[in-house]
Amino acid sequence: MTEPERVIPRRAVAAWILYDLANVIFSMGVISLYFSLFVREKVGPDRADHVYGIITSVAMAAMFVLSPLLGAMTDRARRRMPFLIWATIIACGATALLAHGPFRLSALLFVIANGGYQAGVQFYDSLIPEVTTDSNRGRITGLAVGLGYMGSYIAVGMGLWLKSQHAGEAFPFATYFLMIACAFLLFALPCFVLVKERGNPNPRPIFRWSAVTESVGQTIVTLKSGTQYPGLLRFLLGRVFYTDAINTVISFMTLYTVNVAVSTGLTKAQGELQAQFVLMSAITCAIVGGVFWGFVVDRIGPKRTLNIVLSIWCFDFTLASLVGLLSLPIAGLYMTACIAGLALGGTWAADRTLMLRLSPPDRVGEFYGLYGMVGRFSAISGPLIWASITYLLVERNRRPGLSEEQLATLTAKGEGVAVVALLVMVLISVVILRKVTDEKRDWAALKTI
Image 1 (cartoon, rainbow, N blue to C red):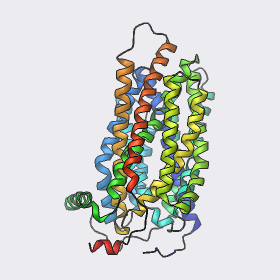
Image 2 (cartoon, rainbow, N blue to C red):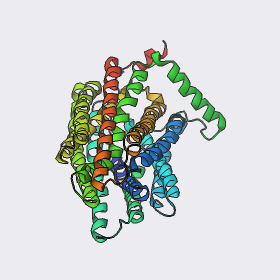
Image 3 (cartoon, helix red, strand yellow):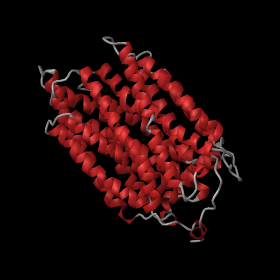
Image 4 (cartoon, rainbow, N blue to C red):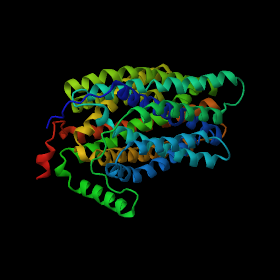
């Protein structure tokens, strides 16, 4: 059934897109860049991958359990926006307190901040029907992905400015995380005010134990009755594997770049600077990629777009692994970063839209909860796989007396093997997704089956 065209205020669309920029400030500044460097400073370069992998996995495990429940609860609520507001406040509050007190406290705060951020992304995605129509969904989500990545410039720019203000001193992590929290909240505010929901015409109680059990039961029934939702279970399973690879490489790109840089003779400080430039290369291309792939999605459909993007990822992971395994110059990481950026924009522009195509209109929150759940599972398993491989190939094989450059070379090779494991996951996802289609569903007819 064709969705009737609605007139959606441009300011609401712009505000919704701006929230994407806000959460990218957090994801780049905290998850992709400075929290991993904070961990490296506290536990040492040889243990950083292992420890950061465990912390990230714990953070994602919590959200894996909560995602489907939160999604089902938002379907019962009168509006989804209050959930987004509170998730954002929790993320910003915990982020502002990072790097204060003992390391274990910061690890716990990271888990809380990441939980708020991840829940916010889930609630944000479920608002897509409020700011798009079926004819412009690819373009709007693509613009959100592309322009949202401009938040990375803000996150990296703040870090570079603080470095210049504290030249020759230890990096002020606590100040940086506070700045990230303030920027996140500032750019999120327009979405809270300007995006108006049509609302749920049949709200039900949500803060009761019966609501929790009913929501969990409904999710279990959905997973068991996959034939009523063509392509859903296959898409979710395939998404586990490709998001596993993509999210893991995003999380560990900074550590990988630092080790490759140090292995070529650069200092740790020079390596960290190179890591920021590599990430900015990826983000610059992601901005272009998000906008470009959004138009492609509207033209050829989200499924065909996703197929093309996953093929690009396979090539990129192959190249990225060779940089560490063969001790190639750091220029190779700049090339892989640019390719990854182009593919990254296409991944989220395509799979966000494809998930909505697979979701019945009255259960968007629940289905995006499942969408988020598999993303969280991949974010648990991916870092654990990376941490296990680097532990076996680096920590277990480390010999006394290695120079910093020799240790970095050994670590980069171990990380190269970890990238190969990620490549295998993308290939598995390609096989799983072959039978998924993006044909429009007649949900009224499917309910009678």
